[in-house]
Image (cartoon, rainbow, N blue to C red; front, side, top):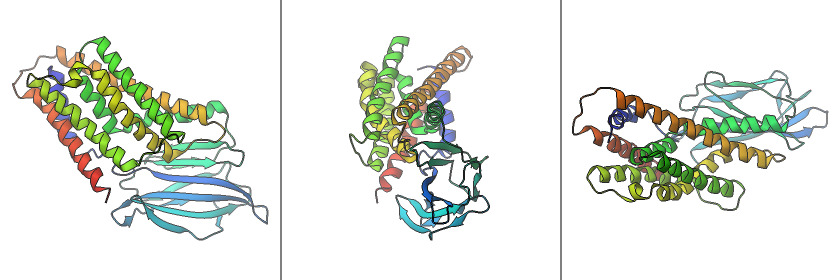
Length: 334
């Protein structure tokens, strides 16, 4: 094992207390155009899902532009650790060109996914970050704009998915040689692309919580494989990393599909949205792999005193953090 591995492990130990992968889903706002009411005002069905903090609802709310009125009362239920609220609004002239914002204390919410579904089947998708929690409702967009939106969402999802990246990092701690790395990353890509498409299009249905727990368990498995290698007993991952990457990649693809389900797909551009989201995931993954490889080279050249315990830090840090996620996600079953 090289120096960069134990240094990465030390960083992981430092981050372990701060990183919580998928503890909270992003808040989700959907505006579905419902046509004019009796007075000619444009109506929208509103779905607002806010992550729950125990039994409490986070103090965040949607602020519509002046002139917007509620047509129906808000109905709220607790579903899958989130408060789901639905109601209908109306506004003279509609919301196109108007600004909608999210206000309140958003502690625990990393971002807000926004989806505006128009009557013609086109949609607008936005990802709001805590520093800028507002957006402007746009007129119908072109196919190119839809493609770009979902490409960016794919990149942001993989780079923000600590569990997926930690799995890839664990693989890279084992795999040596350019060709083997390419084969391993390709196997992972092919596998999660298969299940992403299958689950998103409804060809297969798997409950989300067990999938998330198994994804965390896949990280524990690869971390244990690193330990086996350090002990002089290389495991399956060292002998056939592409097989392990492909097998667990199928699980990770289901995780990606769950994230995409949070956003939804535009009815008139499903193929292009699904394709570009998957491409975005691959782009983000390649950026991460390239960054790890550059760090490996830089740290290999840096002088450092080597201690016998150093190579063991990274796998134990990865395994401990992943096991924490396993327990946390199993607890969510109940």
